[in-house]
Image 1 (cartoon, rainbow, N blue to C red):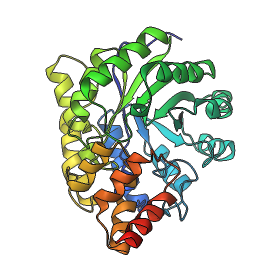
Image 2: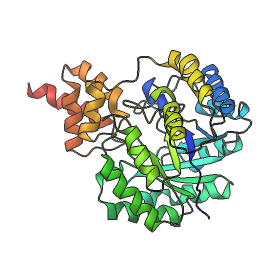
Image 3: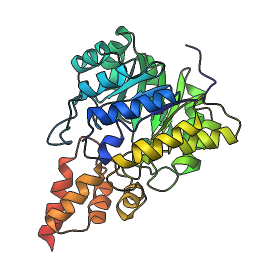
Image 4: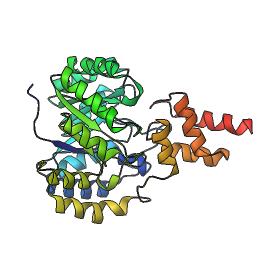
Length: 336
């Protein structure tokens, strides 16, 4: 397929932001946010449990509302925007993917750890068969050298991904590292390149701009920074910055400002800011969705949540190993 030249933004607050509110989205909230995003001309809106389709569980966090009901609500309130879903093989299955497609989801984002692209083959192929736009999502991309990233990205391309994303799940990458990685992906892949950042080191915007400079055309953002950890690249700010740079997104800036202030801000349980815990995530290179789990474990065992996160980073714990958070906290408590 021919690569895009225009920048396309995917709004992830209704998926990544689920982590920040303990997966407690209601139908009414999703309806109001989706309707406003659609009216602002945002092209893609991601809706799923924070850990993707079928993520609602004791380990990852139980959803307040069945995600299929949220997806159906989102689709019903989109006239131009397309609804995207995230799926992590091993959590979600082709069954959930088919159900989401049947409800009207148009994009499947298949996410794996950066060294495990091979497990995405079945799901990318199935999404293609369902007529969905396909995205390969390489999480925790800071954990491997550039040549390994390219190898894994080429696998996703070979499985039928229309776009391959480099995902800075921990918000740990520095701008020069993003520059090197996106340039390498651009030089070695024939499909679209995407970037998904987190703001744990206050670098999400800088990293996103570097990614765009190096050829990424599919970019994720979360309105009001409503995402895991310190949130993602702030969508309404990104739209304004790109407009200042003369880069058109087709998104209505004023409507995004109003949505952020009037609709999304009241949903936040606390302001999205870089505090000691989210800073520790980026510093340690730990999955951003571990934040609330680590804070709860720290309180339960009477230890410092930062120490938990640093130890998780040393052990190179990745998404899917949330049970290790409690194990690490318990070990620390026993050593006192």
